[in-house]
Image (tube, rainbow, N blue to C red; front, side, top):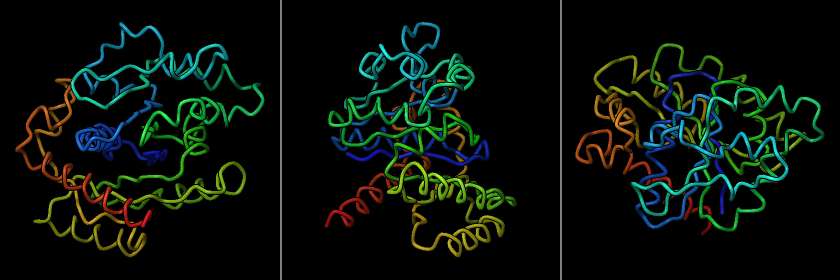
Length: 259
């Protein structure tokens, strides 16, 4: 079992889109997947067609109550087999304040995941675009970090801070955490800018950058509003083809590490 945190403190880089679609294609390959929505906006939750108003227990309850386990919170995604979700609601925004005096609060999620980790092949955690309590909890339990980077002018702005945060967590809370890989999103090979960003990111992260890039794609942008991963919304579009390819590249890298 491997726990992977999807994180970049910049917003709008494709974290949730990557989380939903990478998880979906891995589930399609037969792996048992759990996605944990740690963003109070709950975009992974709504992007999978789950009505947040009807959620009885969410990740907020698991974090703030000793009597609520992750098992109590997890629901099965109706649209894809092997895909499970710990959903989020806006209540999650208050968790940091509520737990401010709790001992070892950075390790709450780790303790909850330890109870269920043997039930899944991969656990993916969708983080909020900030370096607060929720993200630190996610980094503290994760084996690795997947970093989506948008192909835009300020692509690497803030990456230094992101790396520093990972290093701090490595020193004090999770000595085994590493960078899983870097996904370039909203890529347009026809523009000089996208190609410059690709070159710059590869210079910085070397072989951690996936060969598969995710293009700007209107169907990808539309699919969350229908509560569907791209494979069920339009499996022939360029965005779907690229996420399927990314899932295969991701698995190929896992097998190489194991081998």
